[in-house]
Length: 275
Image (cartoon, rainbow, N blue to C red; front, side, top):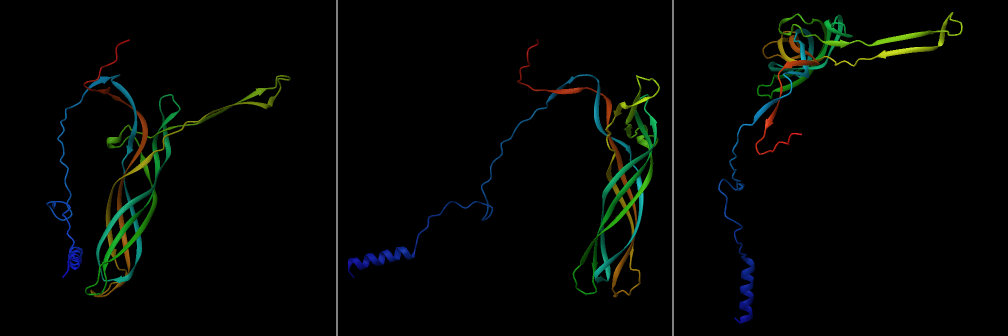
């Protein structure tokens, strides 16, 4: 074999068996591990504060005027397809679409144009979302699922300012006033001028009372309208629900509190010089 053939065989051998250098050492913890970053410990110290301002402050906060528990009774028929043999579980949640207060009785606040609402009608509207899990007639069938929304709508009477922890808390409403002045005919002094009037319109913009969901307690009876055998099926589920719905009725109001504002004492800062 001449030297030229020996060089070709050596070149062919080098191409058929490439040699790869390792890219890096394996990282402990698995083939997809990454190098963790060590965290630096920080120190902390409490921030002191000093009082600033008056001991009586005026703030604007949501005030709870009532927290009633309303009993809502609903009945509905739910179609099941495919048919059911056994109800396994029913999960429920309530969603409120509307909570509106209509005042119907008032008392004046001192000699102002503002009124405390002592009684009102609370309109409540929403729906109960039900997730029904049930089994079919198959011996090893999968669990089936049916989601329905059961709506409800109604109203209830509320009396404010005299009940429990909310005694003295009233929704507040300011009334609008319109005044009109008529002028005498300056020529004859015998009649009114119909081409000259004075108008005064006072409009007060009130904070709208609003609702907040607190709790929902469900009492429910679900059954087939027609009794079936243990292995029989039914397509209709009749439900009777008693819902005890607790909610808050709030309004943004200005409230005085005994206390003072505080500011932090930050070390390292030079206070400005006194004038």
